[in-house]
Image 1: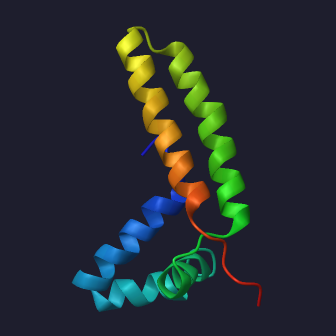
Image 2: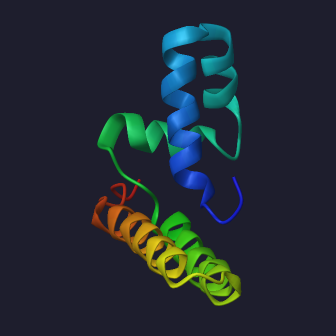
Length: 99
């Protein structure tokens, strides 16, 4: 989905695959990019600081651009509320313990 950070979508995909397809769940867990993120979420309900910083940066840059480009004022407010909600959710998740 455009303008949304990858982290929540990967966590959602992992949750869906864990319930529907053990083979796809294992493929996600074995993935060198997404595997550690999913393991941190499953074990600690945590999101790495690097992922948080990247997600907040991308939401700020591209979300801000979307808000500037959209026309009706209600849409600007709705997008702003959505982006701030996602940022708040990300920032309130703990970071995983150091290995």
